[in-house]
Every structure is written in C-alpha cells, then in structure tokens.
Image 1 (tube, rainbow, N blue to C red):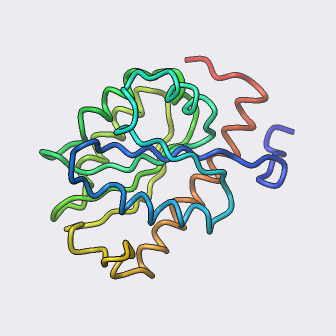
Image 2: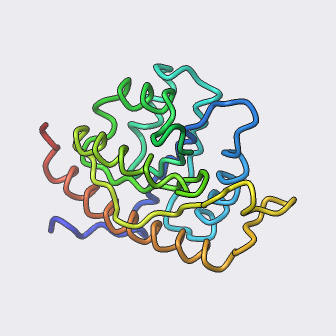
Image 3: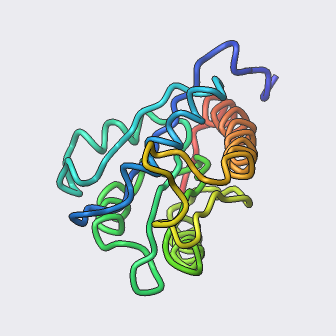
Length: 186
C-alpha cells in the first residue's frame, strides 16, 4: 500500500533553515520561538540549519537537507525579496529539495516577509518541491516579540504554526511514502 506509513512508523525529520545571515538579524528570536512550536507538535525531529554558521555550499548542509523529509524556510524580507545567502543555499543543493514539502515562516516590515515567500514559491517549484499553502508571518517584527522572545500575540502565532506543521506533516508522510515506493525522477 503506497500511503501506509504514519508518523508512528518513522519520526520524520524537519529541517528549519534560517535564511538571514546579517548582523543584528531578528532570525534567532523567530527561530527560537518556532523551534519550540515544532517540539510541541511532536510530528517531527527538528534540525535547525542556520546559514550564518555555514558557507552556502557546505557539504554538511547538503547532507542535512538530504536527510530531511520536510523543510521550513525562515526568511526575512530584504528589498521585496529573500536574502542572497538563502538563494545560494537553495541553488547549491538542487537535488535535496525534490519531492519534499516546504513551509515558510517569514518576517519583516509591513508586509511581514510575504513578498519573499512568494518569490521563494516560484524558486521551489523549479526545484520540484511542494510548498504548503499557509504560512507564519510576523509583520513589523521588531514590535512582535517581548524581551523573553515570546510573541505579543502568542495564540494567533501558535495557531498559524500548528496549521503549517500539520500541513507539512501530511505532505511529508505522503511524499516520503511515494519516494519509497518509486524514487522521484526529475
């Protein structure tokens, strides 16, 4: 049976990719909060991949992406798009994205990083990845978290994160089973 695997059969691995490398970035605060939501969800084993700690073509990143069953790209919006180091990491690891689901957590000014996400959807379609519909976005991110790194509107943010993680889990289970039954050919 093609889709008989469940989360109980195998702990699926979720790579959360932190796409910002700028000094003074807000990414660690957003990533810390989201990592806690992943741990609470319990559908995934978490692998936090911070691009500020690696060169875009680092073989370690490639191995970690290959091992992942699903991804969340955590991105700011810079100049109406996403950061160059994130683009380099995506382009440098072409096959690792294939037939895997991708969700997004974005942040920025008034748009909350949503323009970056829309650009990333086009890139990941070209990489043969499946992006999930819903996102988590933080508009005017500098005002959205308190001194402890918790969102000021925690309930809505947690609901959005659960929605994205539930969608990713469904797609990760389905695509993992499909890849096991028949390797994806691009």
